[in-house]
Length: 80
Ligand SMILES: [Zn+2]
Image 1: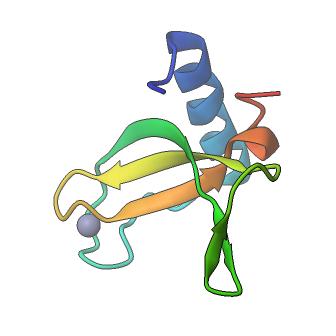
Image 2: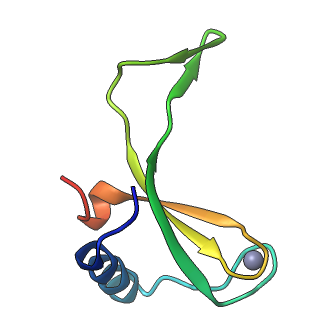
């Protein structure tokens, strides 16, 4: 799900309030593009567990190398 303008603003304010480093850990680039809100399933006993509560995450994508950082969308407050 793409971020709304309100969610983008909350993300930027959260990054600023936490003094988050914008340097990419693989290429040291400093330009990022917010991605989408995604969720992952957990893997246990050779199976992906479906139907369990999930953790919504927001992507931050390095503009140079494409490395993706993931942050808890709940912790940031962009989803409930
Ligand atoms: Zn990078």
